[in-house]
Length: 114
Length: 111
Image (cartoon, rainbow over all chains, first blue to last red; front, side):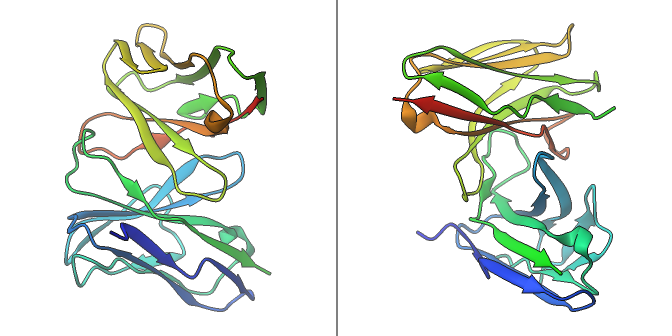
């Protein structure tokens, strides 16, 4: 059981480049989330989705886009990368929005924008 | 002022010590409180959650919430080297609400 998988594990981007961070879960979870984690800053929610075809903004959505065409996949798109987007990105999923349902996190993608 | 404040540490203790990790918050509407554990270069994993005020115990771990003081704590008894990780508090207003995380406290338990 793979859980939540993320690719790539690490990437270096030049300013202005674009890329897509991939996230896949095999637990048939409806809810999926993208967070970024900066040193000493905790996790901040970028976007989330409550099901295929439905997405909504989180706390820090600027500079990012998402789509949810299937239950399993929730890619995060960075357009025109900026140094401020250097961070560790975590994807998570949960069966419901209930706190009792654990959010399962992927291993993260480390992104460096130079 | 940040909604959730957590001392980033690092905190270093000897094996067997009692560890106290704390968070303060400013939004009195928060009702659900969680502690996540994050090992180095891994994603966070839910350790404990508590609804409203009170205590909750799970093995060596005890979570406390004091809503009147807007203060939550996680106690680890008989700490082990395997407890070395970053501990993040998180909270939200309701079950469908967005999680607000603290900065995380880095804990190191020395053998």
